[in-house]
Length: 88
Image (cartoon, rainbow, N blue to C red; front, side, top):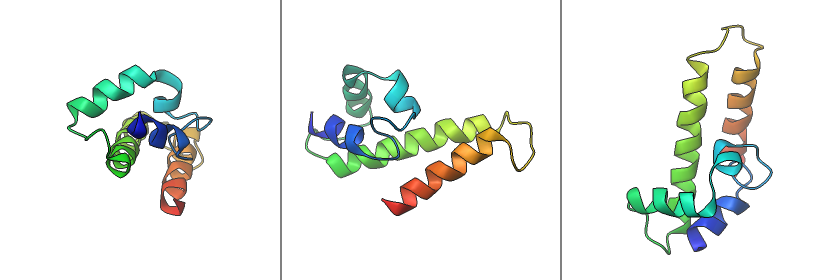
């Protein structure tokens, strides 16, 4: 659970972040995905990197569907996510 706890505590992808990982994946789901990615059970830093990469990809896919204006919500969410990741 060390990996999952690290993800759940991270401000960009954890509880209360409204990230896809926070909203859509149970702890069991995360464990399965981390195992599939080869992230060791005691590698909290690796789990956080994986979570940030996964959420980043999810958000980038959304950018491919956005309206295209520089003030649209998908771009705002993506930029806020990137800022949170840089701060942590």
